[in-house]
Amino acid sequence: MGGMHGFGRVVVEANEPVFHAACEGRVRALVSLAIGRRIANIDAFRHAIERLDPVEYLSAGYYGRWLGALELLVHEWRARGETLDAGGAGTLRMVSATARFATGDAVRTRNLQPTGHTRLPGYARGKRGTIARVHAGFVFPDTNAAGRGEHPQWVYAVRFDAAELFGTGAEPNACVHIDLFESYLEPEPGDV
Image (cartoon, rainbow, N blue to C red; front, top):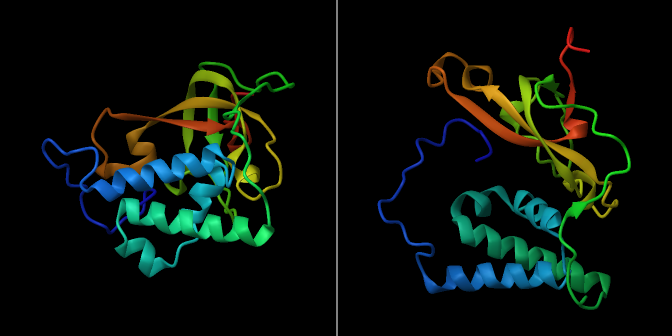
């Protein structure tokens, strides 16, 4: 649930199958087809899941949420009167600017509160970390989900101490790596 508390422990099923029912595989295939034919992009799909009615979101199950999001996106696509596209180009993009950060740089995530889709987890906002790796540039999901353009950015693997993210209840000496877009980050004061 995106780092939200109060939903209990995640139960890992021993020898869990990829799909618990045949319909789950079909929903997965339909979503891949819809994204591949550009009925929506992956970011709009994620945002559609976030826009589901809260009761539906909490009761539908994982692939039920996927199906609900797909229904919403197809309805919106049909309302726009668009036609099918031949296929997508993926999300990897060239970025014209030089990467702002390098491996080893201390950073802090911005405490953003967007009204739309974002890939910056709530539990990671306003937290200190270190750049562990500089990835290539990718389509920025926050603008792409809303149809405001791709606006490619550098993506960084940021290493956080688990205690920084989860407090004293975190596993001792554990760390968490999160891939984050450049605009989510700022230099940690004193490390400029």
